[in-house]
Amino acid sequence: MLSRLCSTSRMTALKPFTRTFATIEVPVREALNQAIDEEMERDDAVYIMGEEVAQYQGAYKVTKGLYQKYGDRRVIDTPITEMGFTGLAVGSAYKDLKPIVEFMTFNFSMQAIDQIVNSAAKQYYMSAGDIACPIVFRGANGIAAGVAAQHSQCFAAWYSSVPGLKVLAPYSSEDAKGLLKAAIRDPNPVVFLEQELLYGTNFPMSDEAQGKDFVIPIGEAKIEKEGSDVTIVTFSRGVGLSLEAAEQLTAKGINAEVINLRTIRPLDRDTILSSIKKTGRVVTVEDGWPQCGVGSEIAAMCMEDDVVFDSLDAPVQRICGADVPMPYALNLEEAAVPQINDIVEACEKTMYRK
Image (tube, rainbow, N blue to C red; front, side, top):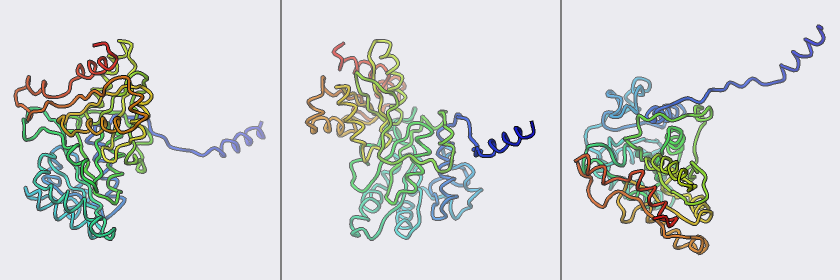
């Protein structure tokens, strides 16, 4: 008996003990907070600045607790002068710091667009590779609720047209954490487009994603749902709408594949085009305006690739925000942005059911 017990003990001792965590529900704002906290802890060169990020804990509470933990040298409240503090941050990135600039909303980034496009995005090229600019511009982007024309618009297509920038747009909490950590570690300027309406939304966070080493590579899209009949390509808030639309389509006998872009520049062309070649149909979904939008670029990709073009069984369908400034009235606001039914009808149209 004793020998058997000793033998069992030796066998048990050979098995390494690994602590695991259960999948938990985490709101997007907390996932972003975790990413910033972990990267500031990991690298003393990382700091954050913006309006109300420190003592007020952030307009959307994304920076909650960071001022108390890291102090006013690394969590910096600024005046209401986007051009000024963005220029300061870009300059510090030239000298080996890694700033995170928070815009209260990306609508206010228009005040600093010269610093982003002409300074941050072009410095590495104009210095012949001598001066990098490792900086993250982050904040709320896209449609909001009841804030009308000047505070409710998507800048994904704007910034994704600029060489030298990388542009990310997370959907879930895992997207938010993994992509923001990747953005902070990247040696290039990154525009990080969060969605105000998703900040308080809970998403499952896996054991892996709870770890401090969890990073999602820039430039890799995610197939959220596999399908065979039509490809829905979208990002940010559009992912949730598209997944709900896919459920309704399943009930109608249409098996839709849903691609979450996650990175808008550089686009994951391989994942997008491989899916379209498989299904033969594509619908793009975004909150931004139709002309020169992200969906326009995907449509162009389909036209320019001989194999993909030959595989299309129906014209590309685009679901976008209406080609108007965002209205204030609730009924007009709802009419101006993509709805689930719009996606369902577009997919049915590609199947020649409409």
